Image (cartoon, rainbow over all chains, first blue to last red; front, side, top):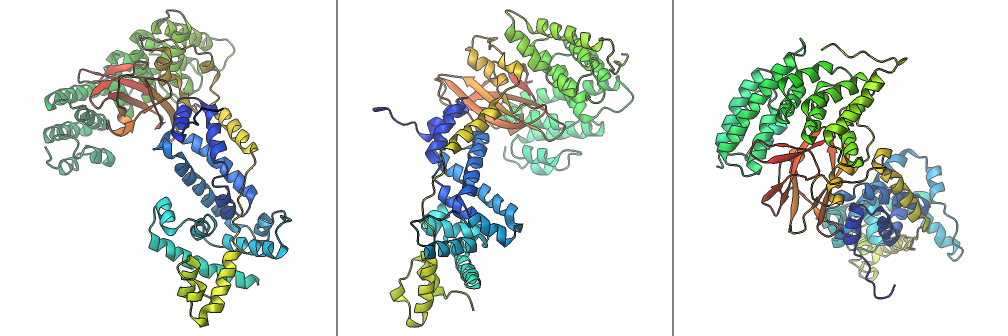
Amino acid sequence: MSGREEATDGQVVRAVLAGDTERYAELVTRYRDRYARYAARMLGSADAAEDAVQDAFVRAYDQLAQCRDPDKFVGWFFLILRNRCFAERRRTKDVAPLEAAGAVAAPERPEVPVEIAERRRALQHALLELTPEQREVFVLKHVEGLSYGQIAERLGTSVPSLKMRMHRAYDRLREQLRDRA
Amino acid sequence: MKTCCVALLLVIAGTPVGAQQGLAGRVPPEIATLVRQLATSAAARGIPVEPLIQKAIEGSAKGVPAERVATALRALAAQLDAAAAALQQAGPARPDTAAIAAGAFALNAGLSPRDVTALAQVSRPPYSTAVTLRVASTLAAMGVPAAQTVELVTQTIASGGPATDVLGLPAQVMVGVSHGRGVTPAQAAAGLTRAAAARANAPGQNRPKPPHP
Amino acid sequence: MTDFHPQVKQLLDGELTLAQLPPELRAQGEEALRLLAAVDREPVTLPATLDARVLAELRRRAETPSFWRRLRLRPWTLVPAFAAGAALALLLSSPAPTPATSTVTVRFVLFAPEAQQVTLAGTFNQWDAAATPLVRTGAPGVWAATLILPAGQHQYAFVVDGARWVPDPAAPAVDDGFGRRNSVLSL
């Protein structure tokens, strides 16, 4: 509607807390895709990401009263999604490599050359072999394009510890990719 | 004012550690000393100490002068004693601290020691004394007269439903008041009592008999 | 010796370029860049049906027991109806409490149109008047906070503008021993 300002996140959150449950849909629509790629790379597939994001929105609603700054809903939501992604990996840690491979074997995108698709798949496999913390720093920097400083701020850690984590990740990825080559 | 209260409180017998940490630095020294005195003698008699600590913290948080807090603490200690005595009247078993605390709360809400004894007598598993007393206190605080409160709780227990029937009584009285035009809490409670009595006396139901007072 | 050389890690971090690597590390550098090239940065969009599924789940959660649905709010005092009934009525997640570790979500509401600040103090937060602020809701003059509390009995009061202690107009009240009243909440 022309001339009508969109409600801020804080306004929507407060409306929901005041009892207007239906308005929560505005937040879901607004941020459904924001961290979809992060979740997909963390969990290995878009399907798993869909489940995780849906689940995270429901949990965020349950805990909405504990969102300290309603205007910063999306950052708080990210942490809930992040926990969900970490928990997911803990659950599926014992899955045999073959099943994990199945999760990653998404339908081919015809516009992507086979060779590139193969290399992407191999790297995603290798990523799933890392610890969630290592995978996360790699995804945030190399998929989401954040700087070390930005990642440090978001996760509440220091840049040096992030770099240490990342450098271990690089070595493990190299090892994984060589084994598969 | 900033004298460390922690050392004083660590010697209080039977005080939960969390509560000790709660008092430290939150109340003036003279209050901490009084709490220690009251608590030491209370603990020796099996009286719970936590309500005294909570009341001291509450008084300080509300900015109440120390003199006034001291008066309230002594009054609370007396209520705890009276509650323990009333509960002891209900049976040979030593009253548990949760029930004593709930009993003191009931006295504060306007029930009499005899009411507390009566409620304790009808409480038996799955209806714990502490819960019965808390619910009765809430009903009394809502304006249901004491005698009716006791009657309603007694009949609800007699009707033999789950413990949640008792827990749900305040809410049901609220519903009664909101639904009717000009219905007072007493009247709403009376209606519920009649319904409970009907259930208790319904033929062919296998229900535990209420204990004799 | 499968670890990347530290300078190649700097390349991976974007702190060095390939040209800045010494010749003996070029091959490793190129391998590292091929690794980065294999990163899938394609945006991921999720289906809009997700929204509907989330809302359906929330509606399921918001379902209240039947006797609350019939509740027509009626104030006991002159406070407007929706605020008067609110503190008691909004007991969410109301399956009957089981012993020991159950919790209940409770919404506290106060109608205080002239207040600059409203907080909640009670036995559940050690009467700390600063610990639990209420937030302004969309409705003018209405402040609210939602807490998750353990089952049991709680006493509380609202603190308006840091100084005025106000019991909940809609809740049962008891003497606090200091000449004021506390509100009682039984879960």
